[in-house]
Image 1: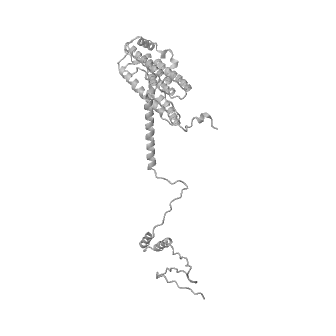
Image 2: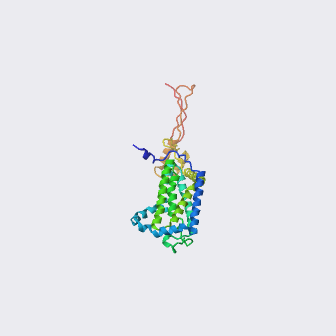
Image 3: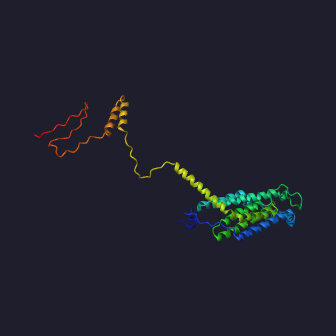
Length: 332
């Protein structure tokens, strides 16, 4: 007997009505505030403010030496922020959801968010060129425009976006609250883990949180494009299916009457008889088929005025090929 848990693993008979999030005033206000915070962090690092001093204090504190017992666990935990493993895990889950709900929106939203992440975070990383703590050259320096690529933190931004997508695609308010709390905890832990290991400055992590949040807040602007892309993919699939169906031969349904194959014409049988005259027994078999398909002569009904004792003439098939005339029979 099946339970509700296993019943939810089945594919839904009809696609559910999913309402995509809209760019509300509240979301626009959050986006604007996060963008201002993002620009403030960049400016504070560029001018070598107190934030850079805090970066150096945390780095010289060397957390990995203060709590070495955590190092083994955090080396594995930080994988939750790597783009490859996390993208595969989340894509598998969203792929199952797409199959179950007859929609490509979960996978398209994930692809859009990862594309925005690579473009925006990657451009800032390469443009600012900040060096990491292990490659710093001068104490107290911001280490900007030195050929690095760690500002903002890609691990942190990827954790915010990848796990935040699960909350963004949640279909109920309760699930959205729970998944938002889980994604925030995971991304916060991944960011602090990179500071513990010493691969990022603290300001890198803070900017990575802001960068990931900006992408999640901006996703409703891309919902119309995602909907058009999904419709186009489904249209292409239907045209491909119709082309395949048109190329297949039509099969008769089971139980349908099969067409009757008519025998060859008498002329064709005669040609076969003439061609096989030299073979022993061939003309006999062909002649038998000719006689089998020849319409027999039917005796017409006796006319009412015919004299008694009259019979119908019967054709004679002899060697002479002539038909003897009918003779009246007189009764004795």
